[in-house]
Image 1 (cartoon, one colour):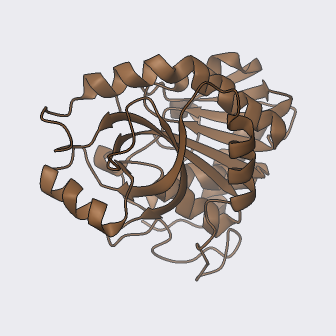
Image 2 (cartoon, rainbow, N blue to C red; image 1 turned 90 degrees about the vertical axis):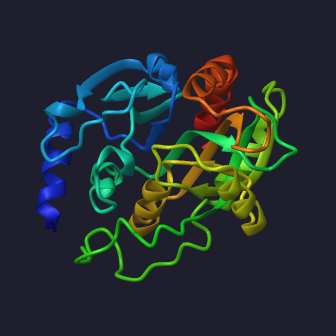
Length: 273
């Protein structure tokens, strides 16, 4: 179903009615990484279910709420819990959160996710700064009628993962205690993990990590003209790399192990933007 600009503006008007400041930076938190939201000062918490024309998260470990306030000296809006294609949403519906950010005046977007490592030199607990992605789903969140209030019908994505923001991320990595890489993220729809044959194929195509999120948000941000900085927390080796099955428990456990260091790293980046 196609919607006009007023449909998206209604969500923003509701959020604006709850705050007395304009968020300048948005953060979407991935699996088991929601603890950063607890560090937001003077938080205004809005459950997704209360926001007109918004979506509702169904993924385990995703809290399903907006938190607005101050983080590292910036006015921020944080999504604790994101939306996925595997929940039953269309690509077009998955444009909703970033379009809300645009209508609130957000200037930068930080995305985080939990991902499987395809690159055999990576290890669980490492962090990958996303430089590019591969999406062969044949779908786009911008499918359907274009809304020029958000962006042009045809738009460039060659620098979607903003080089200037990536440089800041590298500058902030010193002393973080984290092992940082740069690499390419391959999008799979999920909810099943990938097969070993699929992982061998995407390695040939140039992927360093695989996951089930982030791409729709990045594409919507590119359409809206919002610079993106995106990270994968490498929570496991992808299927077939090790002689053991991939499971959700491993994803959660690894993400929790690096959560404290990763939160401190993100806060340093927020302060530096």
